Image 1: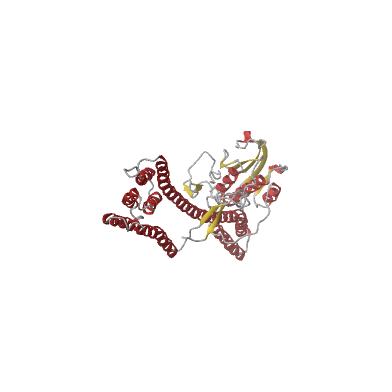
Image 2: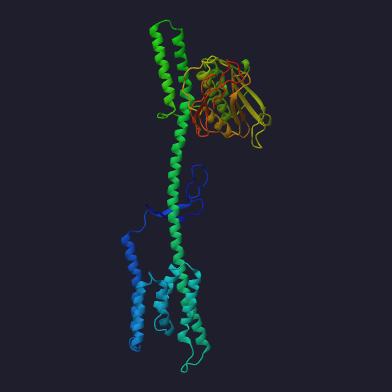
Length: 467
């Protein structure tokens, strides 16, 4: 795995994240693309050992003329032990203390203490080693019969012992801290790379959801109309050939609707948003017995996100009616109410206005619903779209046995919302005729078919659930 060593740039030196705000890693810039190769690390280790052992061996030559045999053997063992300082740092340090006490060799105990401070994590152990070397460093300065106590010599001895014991320990801790920081920066680089991978995967998932939503909102609406017209052709045409063609078109339309829930393969260029101004055309070309606000004017002055959410809600509801209750009469009503009265949770700066969109269809006779597939996610996607705006969406049977979809969409401070199709759940949902299984979405979004039992509605009652 590639490891990047990073440095911390002053703020403002690097780029910004895609959202226009500095990201958590925007001030980290790479220093080197890869770690040092193994051969380089080995050469560095050999060079470090040579820097320690060679001066200690040369220092050993200075005592050959006056050291006794046992002192010479002990000093040679001390210098040789430096080769094992990385494996047993504490043992090597203890072995070098006697040579520090007699003052003949200084490099060996200093190197051993440095290695202890660099490798041993416990601070108490390091402090004890520093004190031991400090005491051992006072050995050459202790008063003797030949050299009585002298204040200047004693002060110089204290300062020398303090410097020789504290210096290697501080240097070792500094190197250890720097190595730990380098490891953490390398881990941070790996985390940053993983974050980029996750963001890339998330972008792919969001794009797939957007495309699937586009498929549902655009293609399913049109294909269901083709299926409806093909069914009408089978009934009204007196020519056997035309009936066969209508039957084939109807079957292909049903298969296409089923496959649209699984296939996302065509990328589209961005298109303009559809809002309240397009609702009359949508209702008028739906092929249903539908009316909008009883012919009154559609309320205006709404944010684009609210208008698009209202359009998608009406489109999905009409598609469901066309699939499951094509003979039913449909009333689409839009009204303006206060957000509190409509039951929407809006922010404090919203102005308190909410657009209420209500689509209500009349009951249908049993067996009057065509056999069209249900995806189980259409109303779920609409509900999520409404919640993004701070509103609500409800769907269910009414008191007369019909079905009603009601969306409350707050206006003020509403975010622009997702672009067309940017929702996380897609599919189709719709009612089944009375006496047939009725789909409703489960917690995970799949269809759950329950046997339709007799209810308070009349035998001609319509669907009781659409998700």
